[in-house]
Image (cartoon, rainbow, N blue to C red):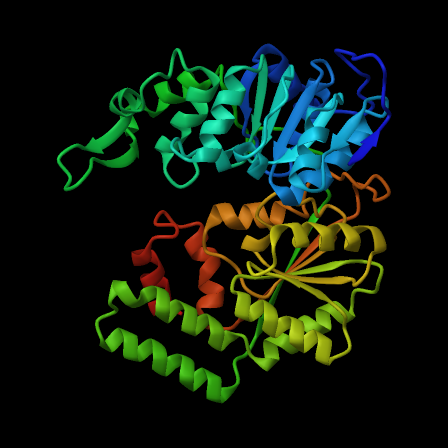
Length: 447
């Protein structure tokens, strides 16, 4: 077990040595005024330091987060609460259980431990990536709910409170205030558009449009949710570099034939995803790979370059090309276990090598601070605006690396094949039919 700064007395508060920005101080005040609440700010707005400042006033505390974030939480707590005892129970079940029940000002555990361990009584509970307990019937969610109900202060953190289906937020609210949010179906009936006559089970379409304003007002005492336009941030300059390449003649013929065959078949919506994938793969040519290599070669170490792809196969292709040309790199995809991703990124951040990271956009979707990276290359982009904004915000955010001046720009390179779906993706992101198959089909036809 990692434990630091042990004390014989059990303090109810401890000094917080960090410095909160103005909008983070506003979030801290919200948490102090609402001891059972959700902080749902967008990625990069500093939910972790904000919450550490809050729990410093309400010790002892228990932090629950995914496994790949436990070490990150432990290190950050040690930085901001230097006089507090911080523990990270480790080892076999019996050893970990004993350490979990041994007093520390703040204990950090992974979310999976909720299901099989006896939890200590604490004054404050923090649940990071709280959307992982959104399912009301999951064993993990039930254990979390019972723990929340016997803890005076609970702070949930998530950037995706409406994850997948809006109605899932009911369980988070039920955990925080079971007397108000008593019945799931009463909640659904009051706020949602529902087809009650759908076969097998009622079909929930989402919050009823005419009730959305009142719904947001109802959430006000329970949730603070802000995006990048709602706060004043000291962001570094963002410099975007569109780079257009030509497809080789043979690839252009293959691209045109695949698209024409699909159009002659009547542009069936049910096959648009498959056609989209095949066309994207055709754009990952040696010409594009050489362009990416040229960008990387122009950025000298110890500067780190992050290369984004959408598909795992593309990430592996880029990584192999870089390796073949003598450029060491690490590749992170959905196949990389989350804990290993965090370890690799933390090691790279400290050692500044290898100086190239190749990753799928989804692989870096949670709990990652890449503010030390000043060069981002998009080998492939996503047409979903939210995912694009989130991916870019990993690097283009308020500096947590104080050794880097805020005036140091973030350079973003978009490598796109001319007259292909590559150049239509930004159009899809900003269209009214964003991420819909019909809009995707329309843009494929125009590519």
